[in-house]
Image (cartoon, rainbow, N blue to C red):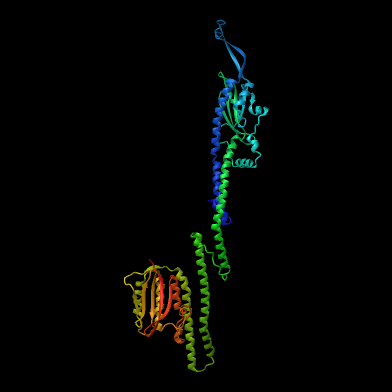
Length: 543
């Protein structure tokens, strides 16, 4: 965990982190394999068993075939000497055997492989009488100790330094003696095993056994492994592991680079594009599209694209809204300034009263504009935060129209559903959608004659719920009737009554419907001699 924290806190790229973490797992596995060191210990134990068997065979062979005596010796045993009763003596003949060096050299030459073993034979006085390495060297037999060959190798030298640094060549964990001098204790008739290191640091096994002739110890044999024999086998085994590690590392690096290219590169592109948009909003650079990947990067790309489009659209909306607000406020302010400038000049009381009325109307209009502007600016933020619920649209509209008919008697609202009894559900915010239809009903009443009905028709298709709000108020004037959803746009006669409307009601309708992933549109229609307006709202159906 600490390693992960260090990597996280280090200022390195995601690609480097992927590569480091993948390689770290392999390195830990390699160190674990080398540190456990089971193979080396097992090899030493197997070598000890083999040397024990070989040394016993060689010792027996020397005892049987490489000993000689110089004649017969006499041993006088006086069994009556203690009683002093005479000279009844008993004489024992025996031979004093010694190891014959010439016979020994012939036997050792046949039994010892000089490339892997070294044999030393000592007499009963602990004097070295034969060493196979020296013998084969004098005989000019080619002996190439492994350590001498491998010491010339850079990799062998580097390997030894690494193994020594981590203590992987330790022999302390082995339950054998390490002092070579104990081999001479074989003269007491016991077998001794010593495992130690030579001058080059290579592990060597020594097995010491007595040479016995007719129950008499005439010397002892020390059978040893050649320098590097054990460690070379371990090295080759570990070299195989290292080769596998190197191949696995190369594959890991390639896969890490591919993974980095799959993850880090797209994320860099997304981050660069986001920074470019942040630093210069006028660039309107599109975020790279990775949605075809169908993974987390694709989801991130889609989310960033949607967020960027939403932010840019909102910025555009704010800029346009600010321009519209400035324009709408400028008109009453200009009228107000003109009235104030004319007020000192006009002396007639009636005309002054008219100016005061104009001033009051302009002030009221400014007040309504400020209130509507404040409400509209808050609405967009509120729509993104409000909770929504699954609602039966017919029941929702029935409750709303019933309440409207109880308040307004002149223009009753009639609610019709094409297919009775079928539930039509949508996920909505009831308060906001309630505001949509209240604005539409108020707009219809403002154009309709007294007694005209406002019709609400409800129907549905496979995916959507369709709601139509119709009135007979004469229709929308002009060819670009969709402009009535623009902020501050009004399609009313330029009279005093039109100043009571800010032109934000239908803009708020569109804003709320759009936030519900719906659509709102308007069209003119004829019913006999009467003209009217029909607002169509589409909401997604919840199934």
